[in-house]
Image (tube, rainbow, N blue to C red):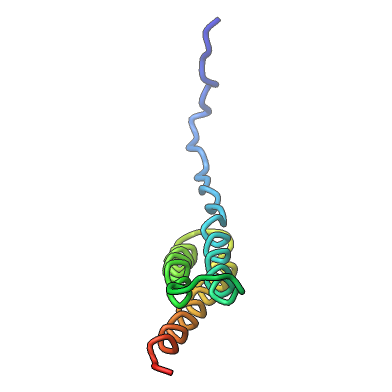
Length: 104
């Protein structure tokens, strides 16, 4: 049994745009921004590196948030909120580093 394509009508087919890409980057940016804001404040023994915990999450969340806002994607508001939380995490990290450096 062989398959043959349907006969063409001679008319050009209408252009169908690709659907927008998913919102996985936006969700990842939001989660990383939240982790960057919450993890440094947890009452867990992180002696010596507590002030620096927010930076990896903040930088990664900011990058994913910016990428999630560019182009034809779904979830742009969520990506913007994730980028904002990531900036907040970076500011929190800078404040914690500044307080850790100042002698008591």
